[in-house]
Length: 416
Image 1: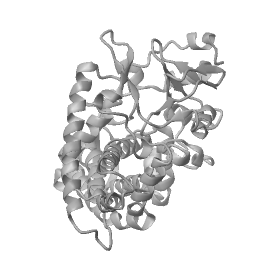
Image 2: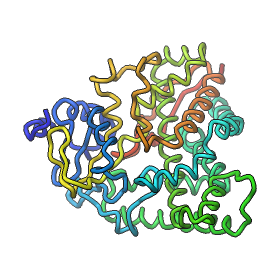
Image 3: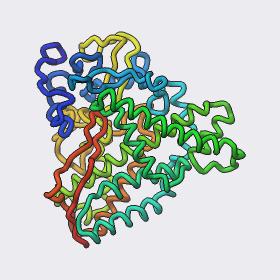
Image 4: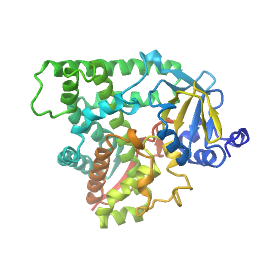
């Protein structure tokens, strides 16, 4: 059902704190009654169906990846559209770029994200993970988010980009501020503050990139900064483009991989049988990580700007609208995934999930995120006999319609 009648049957509110903490009943409502759902009072449409999301992704003539407007919370506590051009223009880099610019950006960055490059990072990731796990095991309990889920992905991206790893704490704050811009929950005053934070990050990265440009073009480029500087020297992109690309990469590392790792640990802490199975059969960890990406999609969704009036699921979408593609809902679409709420390590069609996007905008760092999650879980499982949720601390996610990241995750841990 995709009519106005279907829309009226959806009773949950997008910005309800309970819905944000556990969005899955809301997603079920959308899938059942309104796979294309207009957020009341806005020109933003939520798309929850796996099939309809694929339809949007294939139609680049009518849908743009450029980030031009997003939902925020107005003075009444209701969703409202915020014009991102107030921050100095649209976001048009990597995941938010259309062709031909998108292909240019990917071509510049991909040499530093090959299978060989990612494999070369594994030893350092393992050392960081082992240190964090040993600290947790020695204490017997603690929050695993800070040292494992949050810090490691940003350290990795700092290494790959060519930024000082000692700046990781500040980079993490900036990355999370970027995610907060898309959270849907900030009001206008908060958006202004987040814009200032983004400006500080841009200035920091611009300084580092300007310094890189002053250096001779290396014969062997060893960082994303080197690749982008080469692109600027060759006239392929501008200096502003390069900085925007780095902002997107650091933000994605801080949000998506952190979310994936935290969710994976939580699911294992809640499922002792799966936890023990992976201890006994560590080769299954890769498959488990993929199931976590499906079950708890790191990014709940991404925006597309509508370029031309079009039809989607029987609904007319005006050319002034944005659609929000709900990866997290589509990954639990019962028409595609049997028993979608169940953790199934042997799921046969796991490759059909949309947790890393799909098509030309498939996540450029997916290989890296998978490696980081696998290594962290390997170290955690190898060093512990058991870990479970600490009942003294409730499980809580950050308040966001955009990202599925844990604010903290307290565990009780016993050594192996």
